[in-house]
Length: 359
Ligand SMILES: *Cc1c(COP(=O)(O)O)cnc(C)c1O
Image (cartoon, rainbow, N blue to C red; front, top):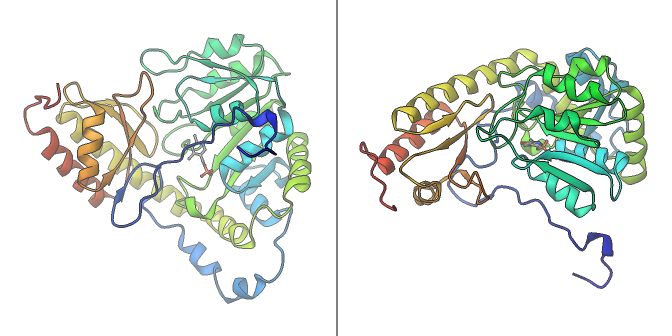
């Protein structure tokens, strides 16, 4: 720590992303997509874009906000865009939260919330998930502070219904509810339509998962116009040109290609369902996820052992060395061929009998 770092950040605890290894790996540890972005994206990355790169991008990101608004039936005034959902969440926190403010989220969820809350000294509460990893909605309905939930949750992959979210939002109009829908497209209902009814709901989504564009860094929020205006004011005070012209163009093209987006989602869900079925045959307990990953445990093989054995075979999955979930693995759903390879590797590791070599 330098002499100059603010005392406020003494507890800083940066978020640890999944490893990004060099070389030839089957990389299933960060829920990235195995599918390419919409072909419409490739088309716009043309000479005009190349020549236009000498100019600053549109700080209002009109084109991208309009395209996203069209998809969800909202005006661009209701849409905020940022450099990934993480930046959108950060601008939201920066705009609406300060030291000491109360916010709640589950004990097991996207770790970015805890690291952000710790760094900025928010007064945060982590409600434990139920034993089956479902969220106890009443905890949040009765809580007297703001709420942030990933829905479906990460890494468990379990979702709560829109009516349950509405219960939390409706209870107290002075409480902000942030719903992070990074995985909503894989078979869940979005709560974006609730934004028309409630001024205290902010819904965040990303192009990193279901639109196959994690490297382009595009995320967005939909909320009532005043909240979006506030966030844009903060953005202009911090980094007016937060989106590159490439991200704006590529994002708008991808957003408009609804057919391709839906086709990719179906493909991922089909591979996931087949993979999960095969895992069950090998004795795994599979949490029923509605995401582009699976969350699994085996009664006779520890997750640490499975993680190491897969790593030996150059397959990288996510293992969280944290209480309650340290015997689980989160495996991103890759292409059909890749998941076949992973399945063969797992078969080789667990064999046909389920005797644990490390117990
Ligand atoms: C992947 C993920 C994000 C990050 O999205 P980016 O747009 O890549 O920043 C946000 N929230 C959750 C729950 C995620 O799993």
